[in-house]
Length: 152
Image (cartoon, rainbow, N blue to C red; front, side):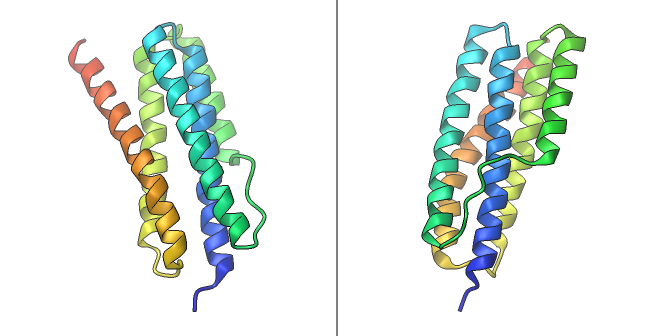
């Protein structure tokens, strides 16, 4: 028998991290002067909002109160992103580096949740479903970062 409070706590933690990701992509889109990057970041933010909605639905299904705010760490990360944008003069390479760092964080959070033996199969299925999108976003930002490093 699985404890739904563990599922709810894990899902809410992933929701908070995903909301942080939405905020990070939104800020990155505003900070980028390159329309291609701004569009990419905006699309990723929208995709992450869908993940949030999906995971919130799972928390509600379990009888919990879904998280609807990001983490304290994210507000510090946004401050850092703002500072970095100001210092670098909206340098797209610096912005992509920050976004990719955030992607590493969310990827590891989802991977850790998928390894948790205390979660119900239904919750793991919901997390696995969201994880596909998270992994795609992570890989896209990693590849973008590496292509920018290679080009100078």
